[in-house]
Image (tube, rainbow, N blue to C red; front, side, top):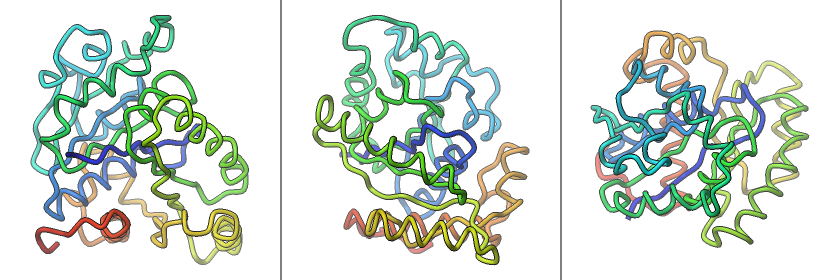
Length: 255
């Protein structure tokens, strides 16, 4: 049975897509079978992986137009269910119980994957709530700035609300600091403040600012394809190992 993880934060620009794509690639590199789900109508993860105008996407699944299996695009490091701009219409859909559609769809494929990672949109709308309702855990990327830190309290309240009302299995797996530069006092202060506030919820791994992470997306590659020796690759591999350790999952092969 696969572990479903939403990579979520209602603030944009914190590294959700970068984390989803490269964490997925890192888990695949460690021998896990991974499915990425792009649940953001902006389709950043889809484009970051070089997939343009896919015929089938998450939209057809949520609109009951196609079985979820038909929307899966196979890949070397992981599989992908891409997004589409039409997904924005899901937010305007007033159907009762729409937040449970994704959860129900995953029931047909969870046994085929070790991990399903969902790239959530930068909002607290129906798509994010649907992703959290379908998830076992949430991973929250936290940008190294105080405004992002201040917004964490509100987002964690949303997680607790979803857990109470819609998905009792949902838990916070961890908070990962992104775009970190240890040379900057502000960044170190933010991490220490977050550590004091959230304690064990903070991952020990921090994702350092690394231009290769942005460059890899511009050419439609994950970081291990683009430059497996860079800091970004090292950090996401460390994060993948830390997640496996938290979940008490053994690594089947060496990296």
